[in-house]
Image (cartoon, rainbow, N blue to C red; front, top):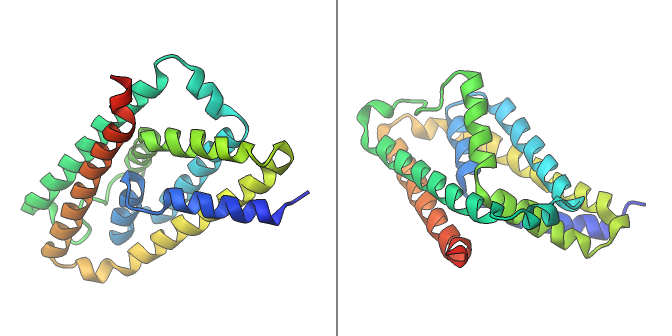
Length: 208
């Protein structure tokens, strides 16, 4: 039986986890501004969230935690990957040839999808927050409330990614100047560096 109270709690929890400019959201915003493959990007983000949340809700989080060395590997390799994304953003901000009306977002669809999957699945917060944390919190509501919890979490994901996809497209007129792209890439680069540092401080250091 559907439990609206559980669904609302899951909605709030999941929204709190995905709101914020991390690697995946920055990817969506950049391509939205460039009007580049926005619909498939949004759909893939929603599908990945659905699968990962479902995996956590139905017990994959405990399985992941039990694999020796998995979390340290994901944490440190993910931190390096996010750091690389930050450096890439700074390089883009400092390279005049990269500052065109659509930034560096217009690419082959297959390349865009591969890049999005890498940004999504190589981000350790996907495993630490989405699969393990949300999965653990969903267990508190019992097995009978799993579908209600999943429905609330999925609704948050759908609304968020549709919102930032549409909103970023509306921002396109503001990015007709090179200066706007410099600011965006500078902000994204700074956020990626902060994300990598936070990841190492909160999770990586305990594995040393």
